[in-house]
Length: 253
Image (tube, rainbow, N blue to C red; front, top):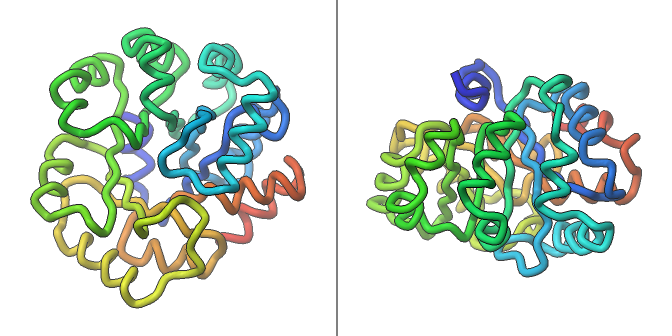
């Protein structure tokens, strides 16, 4: 069983952490992964920094800018992740933008992911229709789950189409904004979470954008399998460095 599906099968709310590869320092990538794992993180999303992001808010944008200045690249990331499976057994997902994948070569990108032991890929700017026609078979051939995103504006028909193509989880964006821009969840957001949960999709649901502490984690995971946290974690890295990782994960539980 793919590690993502194995994690989703657990009777618990999953903590999925996004961080930017090569931040704060270029060679911190694998140490961040190890410390997150040791601290009880269930899923890790490794962000491939990109200079022209679609959905990233200011905190993640600044981390990406710094990581790129540090010298991070697609090739460098794959080099850093060689041997990571000797230390980590939880799901690892690469999240980035499709231009970087295209520049590297989509098939070569998938081959590198498979060789390292990456379990899935999130590409917010790769439309599901293009994925289905051009890349679905390639991803499947390399054992990679494609994680699609939905927002409060995604229609029910579209959600059902997305659900039919996936077989792990749907990334439910909590609001129509960039990452890190929300301050808790009100009735409208909670109603949205429940509405999607009531559709009883084949895929599990994970909520991202706006989760920063135990309260927002509890709210967002009430109707789902767990939450994805990016900006709040990266802010902790910025303020406290790698020594702040354990305390941050413990604060969510």
